[in-house]
Length: 118
Image: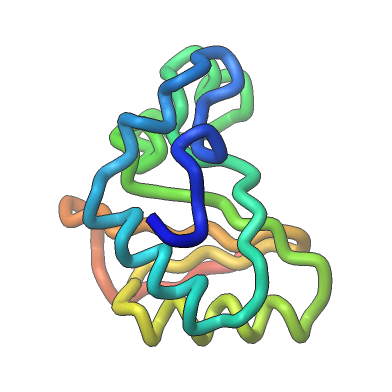
């Protein structure tokens, strides 16, 4: 990876767990970061079941399989750059919140979707 370290994706309750992230997902995310030209601060990557429950994640969360990340977003310009770069890198599952962007490439879920978090 050019822009990330596995530790950025660790579940807070499992040091070293970022190494469980899917290699193809990380390659795509690295490409998106290159395209965006802005830093991607990872709020959440791999999650253990305990941590996922603690943060209210879905029981079928892609974070549990190392196929998702939540990227911090500080303003609308940064949001636009990140979303555009994720799409250009080939991602087709994007969730947008006020202060983060969720992205995953989970093949068992519906592709070609974008959603908003309340």
